[in-house]
Image (cartoon, rainbow, N blue to C red; front, top):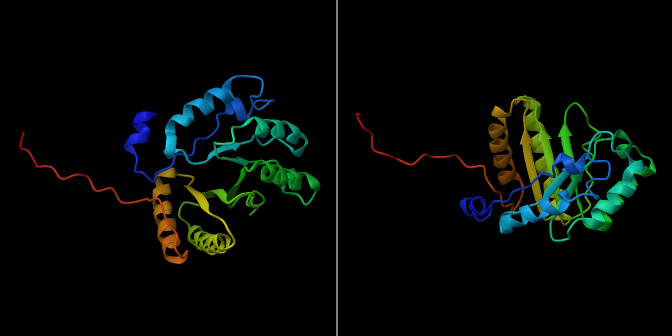
Amino acid sequence: MTRWREEVPSDFRYCPKIPQTISHARDLGLNGSEIRIFCEVIRELGKALGCCFMQLPPYFSPQQLPVLDRFLETWPADIPLAVEVRHPAFFDTGIGGEDFFQLLRAHGVSTVITDVAGRRDVCHMRLTTGCVLVRFVGNTLHPTDFTRIADWADRLTRWFSQGLREVYFFCHEPDNLLAPDLAAYAAAVFSEKIPGVRLRGPAEYVPPAHQGTLF
């Protein structure tokens, strides 16, 4: 951990994902030692620690919110956290979804917004803190990837003007060999369109020059 902390730029941040031994456990790890061990380890990242995130399993429903409430009461307040849910009931107009967002807000926990073409309900556009994690899933650099990025630039501009402070924007592709190209495009668009935004990469890697040899 110390080596990782020292070898990254001063403004780089890690966003550790909570392991499934916690997020997919029936009790969210409340009756074991996994939460304590995980938190002890990631604290070693120091100032390089960004926002952790927990992706709950698709079968985790609003009926299980009391378990999540107990988990969030246990989670250390000094470690930023965002939570992603996938059960369809969280995105209905019923009370279950609203209870979830109110629960996150009460505990100072952020949302994860997933923008994926095949499932639009998880792109819920709800904020609960001044920080948000966005998981953007492209379509192999189809033209719609670029128009969706432009839409995000407009939305983030509005959210920043309304008090949003920090965004962790993750670019994914079905073939993640294309993800760096998508990330570079997003960074260029955000830099151009979002007033005063400060970006953390990506930047082109230029290998150090070295003298050629014959043997």
